Length: 319
View (cartoon, rainbow, N blue to C red):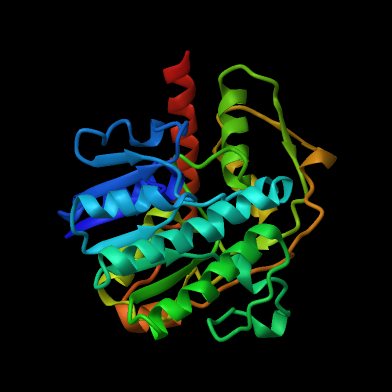
């Protein structure tokens, strides 16, 4: 298959590039102007990359005019919740308008291509304990700018299916982590701090609220799910990608501390505490398992160890 991955330079995007290449796909990717392509540096000789702003009309139309794609994976987004809250207008431009431009370009240039839209489990908002694990039938009720942008794109996508007959499937990944994740995210910031301590830095890990529980998956499991949805996902349907259970942020921290080669101290930093917080999240992956045979395969301990080793290697490379 010839595939296009928007946001290919990102965390999940670069892992999807790797996975698609391993499966024999011809891979094209888009990158935002000025974005660092470090995640793709070892892959650039195997893919075709186009640089441009997806929130403008002409860029994605130009890419789709170059060749015919079988699948378009739309992953490009402002993915860090605080970034969206600091700049709501720009977040909506990228998370909503860019997605609409991509759908419109596919409608006019490649109407029969499969589109996999990466949404987020954040669209569910606050869910009562008795309603977990969260299923796709749960009403969406976003509580932050990032989540509302993802929900808006989902709603915008449905008329492209019902009115224009496009083949669009929606993925709702829950929290995922692994090598290459930005240190804005909790697992990665803990792992980086441990690696820095091992390298001779301050022997303190600075943390926020450790009580929230999240459904963590390995990014490599998530992108494997994206490709299975491209091949087997039902048009117009949303699918959760989840581990099926939740663990506290404290459990993640404790696991990484146990992996540390030196003793560390943990201190709470009020600046790291989110004002808007969902306290517990756990998703059901029954729908994608029944449709595509997907289930999580990578244990969280391996994910965290790989993430820590990636940070260790990054420190060595920068030395």
